[in-house]
Image (cartoon, rainbow, N blue to C red; front, side, top):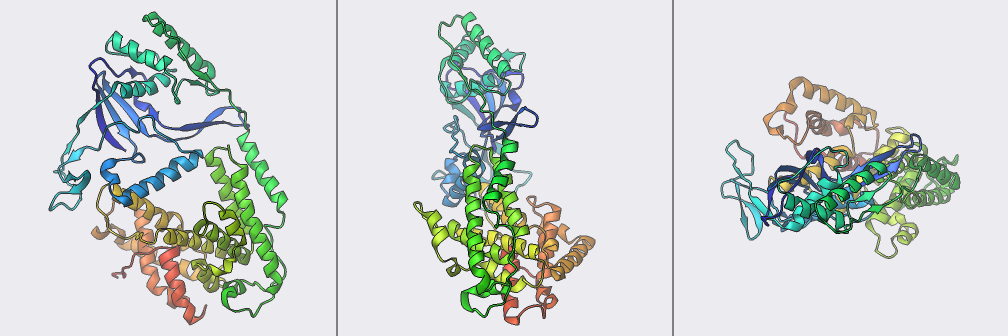
Length: 517
């Protein structure tokens, strides 16, 4: 978020002040009823703007970076990353596009002493490197905003004042006009009485209507009452999962037929996982059912709060990885790869289910061939899945380099956010990769890094990464040169180099530097 200061352009317009003004935000939120307790609970929210009144003529506003910013969106990369983050954080969460009532608020980031605006885009001044310094200065403008914007901002304060004892204003005439606008204007946001404290909200609106009338208004107030659709989310999701698994009883399980096969070519990784001519028909069928079930979970759970849907997805994937044989998981990952990377707008589901997925190879195939004898069945499944997840991101964003240096500011923040997910969130820690030899190396090198305080060196100074994250990345740097020696004799020599490359460039991304000790 960035901070801006607003003032009404119309001398007759004013902001109001409520008891809880400094905790109010503008943005979508959702509620659901907990069947176990009967309570209506907030299940998700997103803050587009936050407010802090200073006086009837001054309002501090914090604006989310998810909203458009003309000075930054001139950069195609920044615009695309912003749109991607917004889709994931907002539109996908609420299952529909969410618009801000204040999207057109005429504010920008404060100016500073190290940059300038050239042709509508922010650029560093000559000689500046973007590093923050004590001598940096910032200039906060007073942005004039229209009466409509003033009324919309007051709307959010009015709408959340049901538990307040006081509403403070500057002049009675200005207060009457903005209250009348709030109470009589049909809007898509606000003035909605729902199951979240319905009597309190209704009484609040009735009091404001009486106050408006007492101030001399003859207009009729309007608001909306929406009864809660009693959806027992917490019970429904469990029934959904049980019904799903009942429909596809053979998805989680294994076949006793593990006869080795002499098939060559594209089925090499499948054969390495114990697949054969006797098992392939069953595995293909079950992989298709796994994909169908994954799709149906999304379809059947529509209307359930997104955080519960996400838990359902995680539960399903966990059950696959911990209950299915690796050769079946490999089939499933290939079908998902097709669905994600090779779909079209009209028939992507038919493509994902009908195209011969053996024609699409990925980094998970290298892991399957190289690591099938190095870890447990579950460990191999998780390793293939993490490799697959990061490999998909590399294919979707071929120009993305997590170790690239980018200019400070919004572009750097977005770059580091993507890098953090790719490098740290998806793979986790190397010492828990599931391969005993690598885990032992990682534990040893991590202790050396801790004992010598290597992560505190100046070259690793980065406020974005916590100390444990720096230690993890350094551990990978230290382990990679020793990987092949530790695994010598455990796989074919020709496969060793490929596995190291996938392991430390895809699964556990490692910066391209050599350890200095």
